[in-house]
Length: 190
Image (cartoon, rainbow, N blue to C red; front, side, top):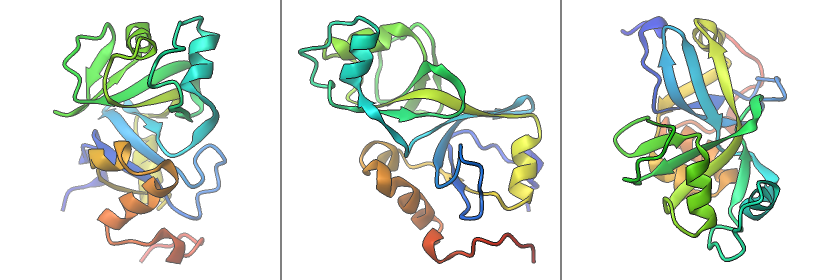
């Protein structure tokens, strides 16, 4: 059995357990983009904000009036760097200025060039724009996993890009055969 410290959690979903009461993470599904000895970074993918890309384009003074992406939701990506955009996207061969390839099919881009492309109606077809990200210091997430605050499962891109936001947490739990609604709000160890 692999110990929690040795788990490679990049390209995994992080599911908040029902008893997790931190308001930043209650009821969230996060997608982990990086996990190594220095810590963990991801974005929350099931909390749409009350703004769309159109409002973001306007705020950034980008001409996106004709963009087919105007009505796409913008997500609360996490409590860290809330003023920065993190764009999780699939299947784009474009060489964006600041991008990391999370797995073969998914990348995370933080540069303005991808927003310019989306405003122009170009860019990746499947994407999530998140404001902010979630981060854990070295060993912090591992301890929270030991404390039963989270479940993890390898990510499935279709859950990110094809399942409606309000159904993503349940869909990810379904990969594990778990119904979070039936789980106790009390943490425990066996």
